Each structure stands twice: as structure tokens, then as C-alpha cells.
Length: 266
Image (cartoon, rainbow, N blue to C red; front, side, top):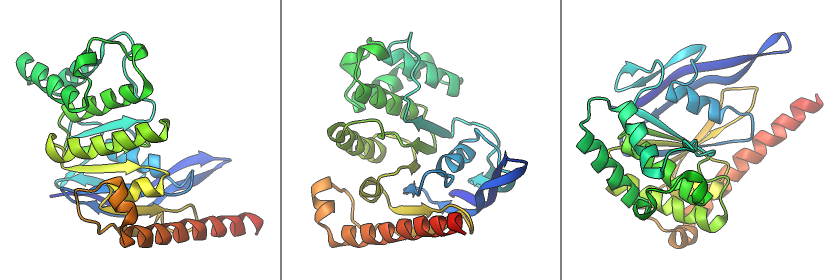
């Protein structure tokens, strides 16, 4: 079974007309896949993620998870945002507890406690569990947000530029931690991530989806990343396939940018 996106359109009112941000999106994400969405600002990456998460409704088309239509938020799909969105008055462990209790009301208290401990250990935050968000760094807050999302044990994890506000070293650490947690600890089957980073998309993904601005369909290309796992940053950058994919993605993004400029001039 899989996450299927079929003929999805989404528009917003703009200047008396409707501006179509998502245009006839067709995509399938299979269990065990990590898929990244890249493209210029305004191309609909975050809008598509919100549709997948059930936070906004498509104007046309459907999203299905294991054949069932996605209609609103569900514990089967968890989201992590760049802004962390932790509850400021709660400790890190209580932030995780609150999310799990809300999403998994049928779980016993012992399972909630054990799950929170498991994932906070997984991101290296158990010893900081009683601290509040303002008492830890931005990187630690993002690690907590990731632990909180994994602890809900969603089928699909949706990431909206989760590392965009972090420095390069912290970002590299959290990228590695994300993959380790996903592949070894979690029940999560599929990951979809929005990013502006080409290298990040190649490092983490099995496929990279290139999205474009109007005119034309939103998805302009889907590029496979055929680099064996497990991966580390040094070996991936030295892999010839990395350079091939990087060059292809850059060419697609430059082409889309040129088309947008031509359209504005015309």
C-alpha cells in the first residue's frame, strides 16, 4: 500500500481570479521511501504538504493512504515545521506526552511514558527532558519536535523545511539523526520533506520531486537517487551519482526560473 496523490488541484483567490498553486499533481509514495519536494518559492511545496497532512483541502483530485481518502488531520500523518511549534509552558517530555495522548487516546499511560522516553533517548534529549523549550537551543527544540512526531507513530511523516533555520553543523547532525531514527527506531513507513536544499534532498531521499511555477503541471520531474543506504555526507558527496543528480536538479530549477522570467517579461 502507499500514499497516492491523484489529480490534485489547489487554488487561492487573487485579484478577482483564482491562482492555481497546485496543478494536476500525480504522485505515489511507497512504504520505505523518503521523498523530497524542491522548487522555487511559491511553487506549492508547502501547500502540497498541507494537503497531504489534511490541514487544507484540495479543490479537485484526491489523496489516499492505503486506499482511504485523506480528509482532515489524522495520527497516521504527523507534521514537523521549521518553527518547532512546541508548547512553551511544558517541558520537553511533557510536549511529547501531550502529542501522544492527543493522537493515541487508546494507549495506556505506561505506553505513552515508554514511547516518550524511547524517542527522546533516540534524539539524545532524555537528560534534558524536564527543561522547557526556552531553556534549550533551537537545534534541541527541533530534535524534540522530531521526537514528538515520531512518538505518535504515524504511517507518514511530513517535514516542512525542518532544518532551514539551523546552522550548517547542527543541520548535518539532525539530518543524520533523522535517518537513523526513521530507519532503526520508528514505526513510520514514509517520509515526505519540503526543502530548498538540493544537497540535502539528494543526501536524504530515494526520489526528488521537482515542482515548478505556472504555466504547466506542478510536478515537472521526479528524479531517483540511486545511492545505496546507509549514507554519510562525505561518501555521498564523493559518489559520481551525487554529482549527476545535482547537475540534473540544478538544470531543471534554472530552466523553470528562466521560463518564469520570460513569462513576466511577456
